[in-house]
Length: 110
Length: 111
Image (cartoon, rainbow over the protein chains, first blue to last red):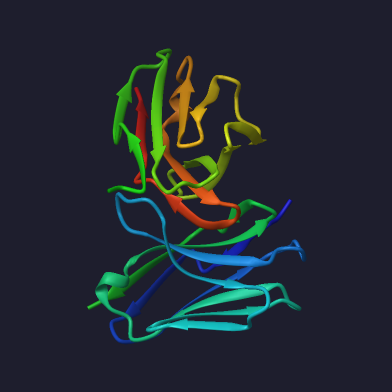
């Protein structure tokens, strides 16, 4: 099955700085890579996703890049705000099943 | 309206008891899932149902039994609860691989 690795496990940044979270995957057939944000006491929520026919996708302060050759994808958050503090998960699919990374706890320091 | 709702939100019970967690989705999705999130926040899939048919059953003790009365509902029944079952359990649904939506979780504490 798919193996998704995610780094770093914890990340602290000053408000206004950028944050980058990186993931690698093992299954070359994976073609869909969503990112989820989990706030305290809540379920993970989809924040952005990218499909394998696209190299980069942006939505306001959030962007995701995909390198299919190297089998890695990254989440970039610019101009971070305290409300960006949460646990972020990457995922990759094998068919209809998703495998999640181990999560990154992001803290934005005001 | 909540897209994926699960009840209860909190469940505290003694070892050896049997308990159920219910999940309902109103998104019209054809696939539903149960995930377990441990204390380190790792999300591990337990079961997946497609149109009431079990399609994924990861290595989970057979004390855990999912039941899907229709494609909008997927319940999780747990027999003979153990301390190690303490975790947050998430229900999710999707249409194929798209639109993966999680419920808000059930925090199970076994004492």
